[in-house]
Figure 1 (cartoon, one colour):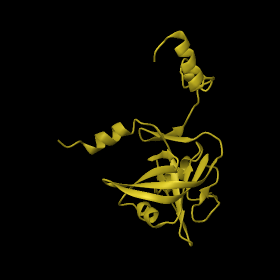
Figure 2: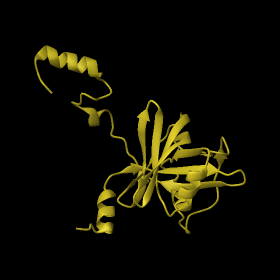
Figure 3: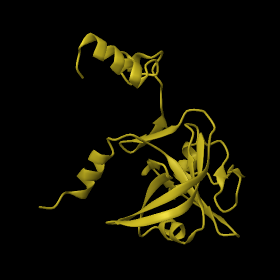
Figure 4: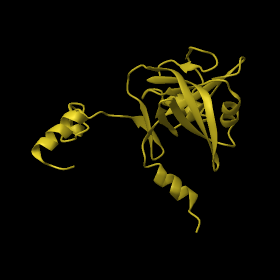
Length: 188
């Protein structure tokens, strides 16, 4: 039984994700591609993964590069997301580059990772590129979010309402919570 690809893609799109631009330089030019399939893999060693359509130019470039950058876009970088996704109606001006030309950083991104290739795996019609993080920087600001085919901002809840009653909340540490639960005889 085959799955209808468009319906599957729409269903997968219900999972909100951040928006990144994966960049690499070849000495004479900077290349970038918009990617929402980005995730952390490991802290030791520090590994991250991006998934690229194997037919894309970006996939080929990433397979040949010595280093690459992952730029987590800010909520106000909607135009850059469209530009690096290949949209003809996206504004091609105002791009400011920073950092190492082999793994260029986009100015204004909320975070940046510089990676060296670790491994590449067959992922069907995509290639899963795992990179070892050799440098990173969290720059602050609100991230750009992609969900159900729409780019938008992320609105943080006021106060700590999202964490109310959670053992994982920022006001609680695992050891303290489990110690308190053990003292009361309650089980999780």
